[in-house]
Image 1 (cartoon, one colour):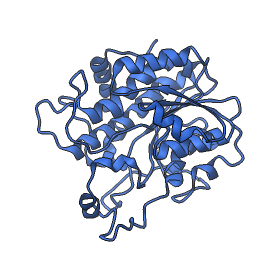
Image 2 (cartoon, one colour):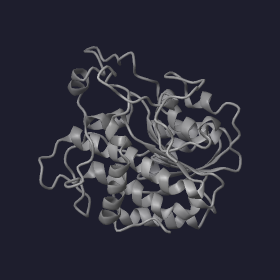
Image 3 (cartoon, helix red, strand yellow):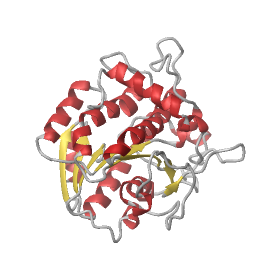
Length: 321
């Protein structure tokens, strides 16, 4: 059963770091897969999980860069090529992974792109929707047998407060009939990530697989590579002198909620919820600041089910069984 979308008692908060979340948690013998685990939040996510004893596999679009970034990091870390915009690459990644491991205890769908100019993959799909949602949908489906083989697996889908921009246009998700706008495209993709976690949890609970969506918070990372300084100043992320807004987190704190959802015993028996600041998020209303809160459209189970069907149609991939 999908858990209530309401905060619980958590000892952590806005400034908690990923390393603080895993203090006292032993992940020895656990296998964890992190997409994009060599840049921004992904790097700190991998650092915390590997440091707690897990065997971490990083899916990387640029394996050479990943090797350079992760080479000196302590712990058991391996790298496999993965381009989430390329269906063949996704299948090759899943095949290679299945040949190396027998289970996945935790899958963190971390990789993303944001607010980029219009681009399309080989199938003609809009790049933000294709990479952030459809690529992870296909990959998770291919890895489903490994998730079911674990004893109580968790899947963490990186969403964003950007979901509050808009929901998913199921009639035109790839901007084929409407004008492309980079922020609505991002909002749609991040809503899709949250709806994916909602539906995956409903399907996975019978197999012991629970899913969570995460808003990591405001953090300065390479995710902003497509935005000019002027745009970020206009949005209030920086002042004219280049100082970040006081609400922004360190990268380690930005990774904390993903790690919390992946490992916290407080979430045992729960799933399907959207989390922020190392807690289950609160529903948004007219008084909620724009940087937090859960919009009703990502809690709509009928929309989550319809998106799942649309994703199967677009990718040609269904979850086994």
